Length: 230
Image (cartoon, rainbow, N blue to C red; front, side, top):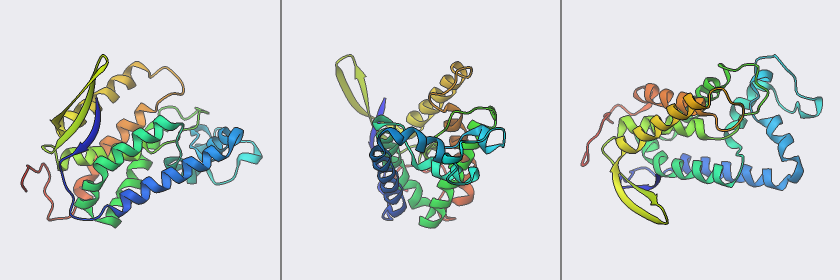
């Protein structure tokens, strides 16, 4: 199931959402320009849990920034076309409304805090891991968690493939995002023993952080659990 758009117009121009998308895209093209040096950049600017917690060190030539700063830089890097397209699609669909509910400044702080929570949710269970984590998925998961509490009744247009036929129809956001979260939980449970791959724990951590933080970051005049027409 792939979300395509929602029917939830925003009053404020999504300046921060667009800026975040632009930043991620620019960083991705910079990564592509590196050629064979891309993997080195992933280790230098991605979050390596063992390095973050002082259990390992990168080679001197890759120690370009403090390990703590990679908590932020890792959010703007991606591992391939599908990775960045999927993340930016979710951010474009759901980010504008969350930004609208919080305002520009609160939204960027919320986004970064959710991203930090997601990275830590991934790193803390396996502090000895030397596999770098990159991607905006954790921060965007926070946006999804916030959207679920803010606009559960908004309609989301989704595409579902049935063999060679793709059907599109609207579902309530609570169904789309609730199912998304259940899938993250199932994938986390079934792949917990494997290394590398998708950081399911980061998705879960970011989503939960978003749900917990949205009451603190939303404007006072914006209610939770809004119904259509409000």
